[in-house]
Length: 134
Image (cartoon, rainbow, N blue to C red; front, side):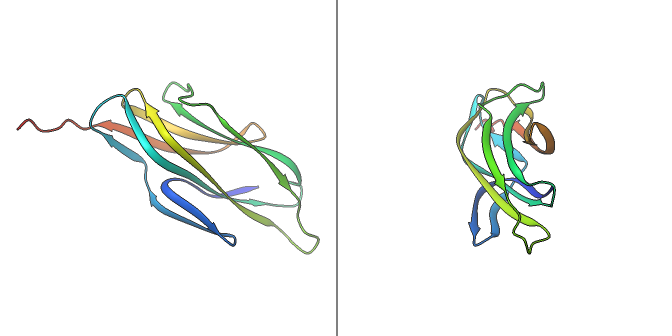
């Protein structure tokens, strides 16, 4: 298995196997804490090889710098069956997240696991931006 793309973005779509994503980012600028990011997506493009067949468990977990979850982990069963004439199988996964809350500024990440093994980590920095005093 190979994760070709793992990105946090504003939005993503799958168009007949083509992964489209808009506004990839790694920093959120917040005017106050706690901060709520209204909507984002995690876009993944994963290639499975012979030997990867079976039902896999894909899980995403938003964690803070201490490794604590900031929201409930997202777990998806992923059935993998390669067609007889295929050397590999590529699948896109789009997970939309609404009202993502950050209690404090700092480093966060999205931990991507398959069958409880870490496969990718998407870094995210939340920065408090003070508004200028008029």
